[in-house]
Every structure is written in structure tokens, then in C-alpha cells.
Length: 51
Image 1 (cartoon, rainbow, N blue to C red):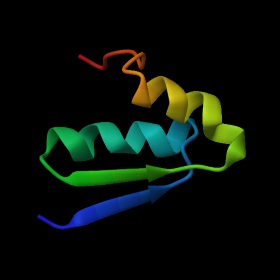
Image 2 (spheres, helix red, strand yellow):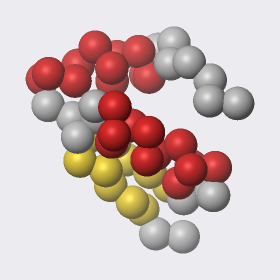
Image 3 (cartoon, rainbow, N blue to C red):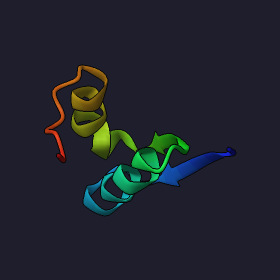
């Protein structure tokens, strides 16, 4: 499958990634400096599970 890039790592951007990843897509989530705390949590594995 192709790579999907989602721009904006806030609530909506990160939420759309969940069904894309579950469907097997390779997803890249991009954010601004305002999203650093969210991206750091995801990278550290501290994001809450959706299941």
C-alpha cells in the first residue's frame, strides 16, 4: 500500500490515523510545534489505546 501523510497532529488528525493504521496503511503524522506534546507521547508509546 501507499504511504498516507496526515498533516496536523491534533485531535482530528491523530484520530483519522487510527482507522488507517488498523486497515494496514503506512501512516505518517505531521504536526507543528504546538503538537510536540502529542507527538512526544506517541513516540514514547504513552498514547492511549483505542481498543
